[in-house]
Image (cartoon, rainbow, N blue to C red; front, top):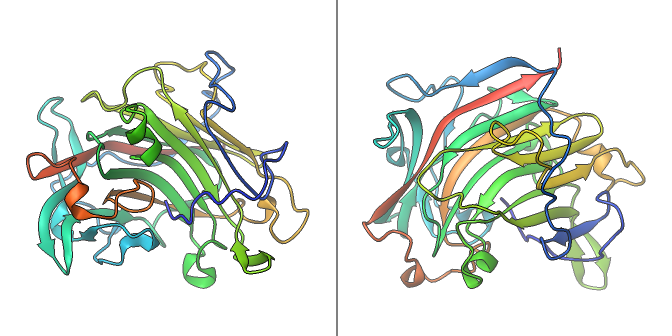
Length: 308
């Protein structure tokens, strides 16, 4: 979700490269595949069934820093709640973006993380999410960050973006309800050529074959082991579909090698950003995704499974 996103240094033959981005134009998502369903045991979950958010697990972020991405919202406690989704009747985490002037920002929204409370190495991490209509300007995300963030900072801690929607390319192509990506960031900034500083990342965008903003809940899953990171949509309905994102994590060729950064504990984050570089919208007047003055992202549950 951070991103000086997607600077392309080279298009390499392996996902273990330095910096790389792809879209479906490069590699169409296969219709069928092997899937990842068996051998896991549930080790932790939050069903968001209590009257309020469990703050022994979740840290509610309060700031207007823009996430390093020129985002237009101020994150407030008041925009994070637990309650029912009226359509389904499910009890959910609710992150609500609002047109609201606060702290020098034109919008407010919600972001939570489990840093230093719940963090995991490997397993199957999944969240069942109902997404708002993102065009034009909302940026919902389900992601993870290295639990050594306080010690090493970003991007040395590593980052795994399981779901991001709201990208400017989806807006421009009118595929915003189906255009999304998975991504990873790692390493550190260094000068790769005179005056050109960069860090390693890999992102893959997809245009899905059905809407993910249809007013229904969809399951987003990360399958993470010693060899790779793989991400899936609606694995509960389509267990044999191939991943929309896959990256090998074994290379330790140098200190930028991806294998140095994805074999330790990561914590979980959910947020609903407004505007920013990812959306291509930095002018508050161009945000049109809040026609009723607000919009919400609903998370029915988050679960972590591991092979014990």
